[in-house]
Length: 153
View 1 (cartoon, rainbow, N blue to C red):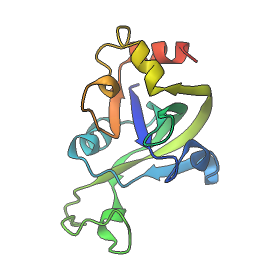
View 2: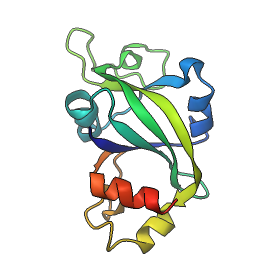
View 3: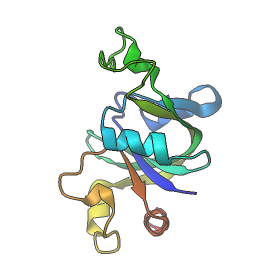
View 4: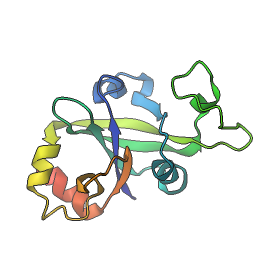
């Protein structure tokens, strides 16, 4: 099993939106960064767990946990000219973008904010989220970092 952190803006799609979906499951689509795409396409597996991170909001931070319930497959939002994630260069015969399905597991007892995580930078050394200039929306989390972050809850 691997661990991940996946960012979403709560105004667009938050942890409560995931909880309220049928079967508490939703495709994690719209990712348009090659490195994040590669993680979803090549490395995520069914059963992996991910932190749900609210980004670009008043208090960015980890708010919940979800499970990868379907491994990487083509993101068909890239083929739809009516979709905000449309990419005219993506071809259904040779897809450029991928997604995974995620299933709600639980909300955390409280938001573990980015500011709080930074206060634990020594213990979380190497965590992609804390790297200067990191803007990835999907990133790996080591098992040790996963356990440490959950201990902050």
